[in-house]
Length: 102
Length: 500
Picture 1 (tube, one colour):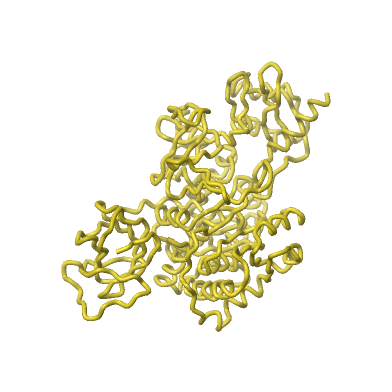
Picture 2: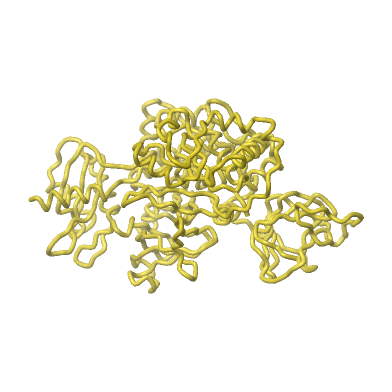
């Protein structure tokens, strides 16, 4: 799928939504809850169920990365399902908050 | 990623929390997002590629910023303190545009070709209009988030381009989403047309920290608002800080809720920060160094750094109170020689270069980044053995006397410690023997003799850094964001010297 920076994607099985912060190097399958994600404006296919292997949850405002493809995602809506790229579970990126400077 | 998404996230996650406030009232994140969308529908229907904001601080400012983003139009806040002719020239450069202007400012830009003016009140009403609220908007496809005109101390203002990607990269890599407690409140008094005003909206919104706006800065009003709103965080430019401390003493007001005070936008005199740390021992001080072209902060001297430096007997550690701290971990920073290539080592002075996602380094129709992404800041500085960055000022301001680089700020700091000196500016003047010589303009109480002042500097620095030309005046020229206009003094004094 074409994953452009800034584009929004939603889970096909629950409320989870993400924004692409950094695009992947090549073509990838962006998945959530064990199923490919759908562009935010499109209709999600019906009848899919959450896979237990991808049900660790996604949080709003957390960043997730996949080292291999270089993709970086930001949780835009929370949900029960968790994210994966080409079947690989993403990892939570450590935030390095600064002392408030503005 | 688009900046308006930051508001959307907060509206969804902490919608009921108070977001922006002034004396006239406030808005929650959910209200702000709903109104920004309505404002976007209003902008979308109107002619004009850019949304210009000409007004004081207040909730209408973040609303216009986010509405412009949602409508896919770059947002350009302008400096209302400019003279009418200069202001009209700038407005003309934004055409075709929609100008949101405070009532008393709208008439100043009336009749500029290609520009639609709406008053702040009309814009705020449009944000509450039901038809606008219910309108559906196409997905915004605009890369440019903000156009900020530089203060133009050395010529015509340049329009710095900040793309959505630069700004959101800065925000999400330096601020934790919803990290602020519900009691936290940031007092914002920098004007909307300053990069710190823009970044305050974005980081405040993303962290969930309420913003209390002061229409424009005045020391008494700042202290009283900080007290009344139980302000926990604030950002000031250096000239504001000593005036705030004076006002606290004159009004006899304490600020028990204040936890963090950050400063930036110019060199902080060491004597002022030391006074502030003594007066506000429980406050976390943060020195943030950044440029418009880098989407705000690129280096930070944090609270622990301040305390360690303040309490240290080691002169190298103590000196860090005059540094801007260390570069953000998300970007690279180098000090380079005048050839622009050779990377210099610790304590070698050169030009500061940065690279990273937040570094826009771009003016309208003119990309300033090198092919490999580096931006030359035009600031001179050096880094100590542990990576603390010392900024010496604009490259053009550094005095080169007989091959030695002299930072005006260093000499100013020493002169400012003299009991009779109230304000000072140091700059270079042409000199036949040395290329340049050190000159200074001073505001003093009484009339100190120049020999005594020269001795004062010589005893603390060295003779090559001692001013050779002295000029006494009633006040020094500053621009409206508190930047000392050294160039103005330099030009005046060069002419005076030439005339003699």
